[in-house]
Length: 311
View 1 (spheres, rainbow, N blue to C red):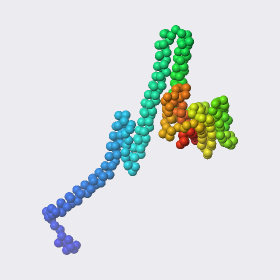
View 2: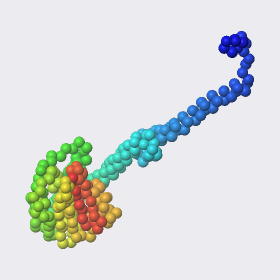
View 3: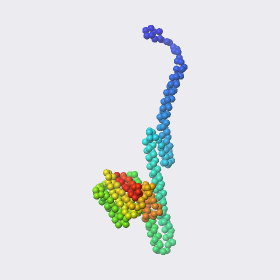
View 4: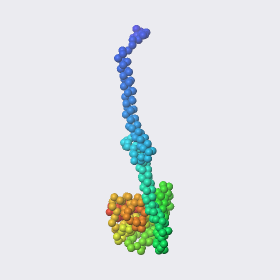
């Protein structure tokens, strides 16, 4: 005992702590680290699960299975990455499907005139009559022209599908341009009328005159095939949007085909020939031209109107 401070000096060995105290301390330490590990597991498990889904989807994409999608919750930390990957997969799937369908359609479209051309070549040596021979030669010439027209349409569609295509836009008064384009239908059996107020026709907007004229003519000619008595082309300008509407009084387009008619080689009536039905690329080219101008197309519910908008 130290009298001045009331403490005791003890020289070891000191008495050991009771076993129960050491056990409790060990249990507390183990419980602490177990709790930390459990919290880390609960925090990392969703992230690991989402990464596993992302890795699986990426491996499926590598096997050309672009139908696979990454399914994660919107509050997931990798949701932006998964969303971007899904959008990329949708775009790739669309391109692959479109490329496959376009390739099959091109092969089918080319096979028909080539078969006729081959048949005519085989028949020519056997034909003695001059009139029949001239008819076969004329048919062969028609087949060649059909092939040239199809190739020209395909090249135009492919060119408009290029991502780096730059259009030469100019400020043009919509009224005079529209009147010039529709003047060629002045002698048509079915009249093509223009509806727009005088103020609208004097306004200017930026577009490529040649390409937009091509889109306009493809729609108008398509309308003339089905119109009963008239085709009406109207123009409206609202803020920075120009809307061209082509309307006919024909039977209309079924609502289920409103979107598919703008796909390449789409023809609702497969029985029509080239003279009446074309190649099925006209509306697809028109859509590409509108998209290149930053615009869009719309088919109204009754199926008789097709509206184009330029932003």
